Image (tube, rainbow, N blue to C red; front, side, top):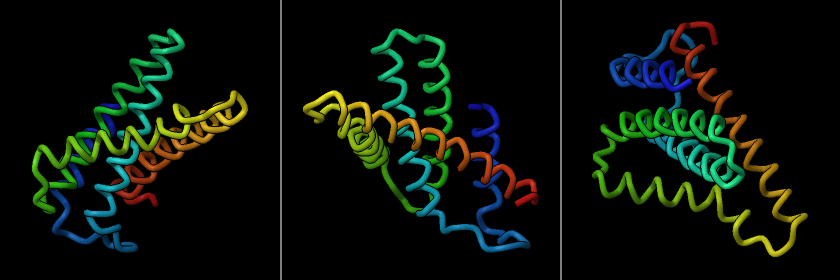
Length: 139
């Protein structure tokens, strides 16, 4: 999943000045927020996989997370964000993704929070698919 995401991010970075022929794409800052949010979701998912000892799933989440970080970095370029700001945003997005799980006082709430994280993870993967379909003109 990482290679297509990275290729897509580079495509979007080169095409930022040209509006697509169909519906207008979201503003770069919205794409940046989406990518950074998903980077945090992938980091949180990776942490849970590491905690549970699922090395294969952890590696997959890590690759996807690096792809989202690359995309967020490219989307952030026109926004003039510094490396420190990007690092802070990544830490905050990861904290948000893990927060409801780690602050949970009981097992049922933790299980529900993990369910939400899994749903967010799946939504991030669908987001990449939508971005790729858009870049291919099939949206």
